[in-house]
Amino acid sequence: DGGITQSPKYLFRKEGQNVTLSCEQNLNHDAMYWYRQDPGQGLRLIYYSQIVNDFQKGDIAEGYSVSREKKESFPLTVTSAQKNPTAFYLCASNMGGYNSPLHFGNGTRLTVT
Amino acid sequence: DQQVKQNSPSLSVQEGRISILNCDYTNSMFDYFLWYKKYPAEGPTFLISISSIKDKNEDGRFTVFLNKSAKHLSLHIVPSQPGDSAVYFCAAKAGGGNKLTFGTGTQLKVEL
Image (cartoon, rainbow over all chains, first blue to last red):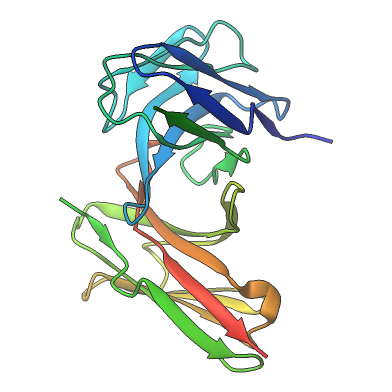
């Protein structure tokens, strides 16, 4: 059963701590993406990767970092430099072709206090 | 700068009637448009897409219309069903790239 797995579903951290969100896909997709959803703001692109060992900044990359060491995995680290880290984070993937729709995971809700 | 706009944050429709969700965009370079549906605490799921070379695309109960001159697209759902109650996002991309720009979403409620 192919899909995208994000874990954990809920994550709580203290301010000043870095935290890493997991994203794994078994769809054999080349491209992977991280989006953030905030109330009333839709989805905003944080980082994306079109191939292994390569990634690009999205619209709101400040305070985040990623790695793409394996095709199946695209972890996102929310660093202490991110000013408003509390949000719903969504990982997605696609084949990378222009008309290839994104497939999303079920998200991780991060709360930083 | 919000390049993709969904000006109606919510819409309520009776079961069996037509739901029309609207989306406007400002970037004339956008040439591919998609609609996604999202339930609470889940990721969005792809519904339907349309290329700028077309003005209509239909898939079952879902039809997307594109008016390039007005920079406007709409999603029609007919007949609407209670299970269609969700947030609907329109999204657009430009120039062969992989970056999708999303609207802010419209919460659709289909009432019995």
